[in-house]
Length: 352
Ligand code: NCD
Ligand code: ZN
Image (cartoon, rainbow, N blue to C red; front, side):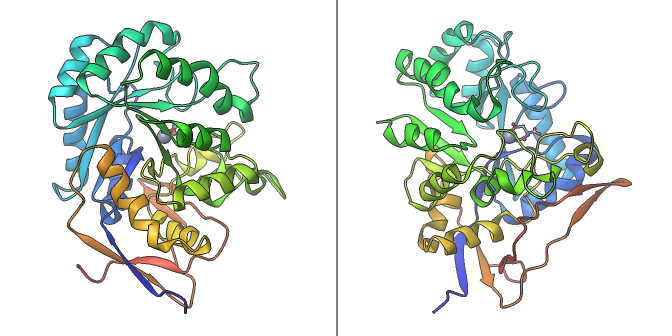
């Protein structure tokens, strides 16, 4: 018999872009509705590099939610060439800051302040290991001559593995892992290596973006990969393995900025991720492991209590209807459309 409902501890989104200003005001409620907490990415312009920046950004997030404090933004610092030991000590001493994010310079949206010479950051990585502060990595090399579809695999060999060998005590999350290489690397590690997986990489391969017309709303970084990689991601996500957890990488851009001759990278999936994920787990006959992926594994990694609040997802006979767009002033952000009917949605009519 088809399962018709599933109750989850309220999920945590361990990789989320909320932006700032009008965009923040428009998108924040969509995460707060379905998620209890989120790891907030620091790639604003200028980036969030100090605890002081992070705390004021956190206040702006609460203000955007109208003072609702039931959603907890967990802040991160953006590692730059100017980051100091003092910045890291302050971060480790602050309950509100949970991790430090490494963007190789030029890897993705607003990453110009990122690290150019990773060797120069090794002392900071040692400090983070001492302080127990996790390092979140955008795992792609940025050398111009490296093919975009190979950038994650090459990052593992040329950047990540050397860091792990030099500083094995450093706790690392490979953010938005998108390849079988990444999954296998994480699965083969004895300790201190974890990965987040996005909703859209579990649902789509690169054909969805490129065949029968170019679909800019599927363009994101790391870029969608071939089917064998998607299958590896699905196996990891649905396995229950505690090293893999949800980070939607919901990354809103104005629709016009994506539907452009040079479109921005990012998929806005905060509004419908959970229905999509229930679909993936149902297809993989692994609904029993959905709660581990959305609500347990990530919390355990960050040393947090599992959320007491519960949410219910229901399966309906008609496809769920999600908004196509949300408004940002006079403009819009396009909501992730996986291109297939989604029969699951979060039942917001009850509190459990
Ligand atoms: C993100 C963004 O727009 O901030 N874009 C994306 O495609 N995922 C940056 C990132 O996480 O790489
Ligand atoms: Zn991201």
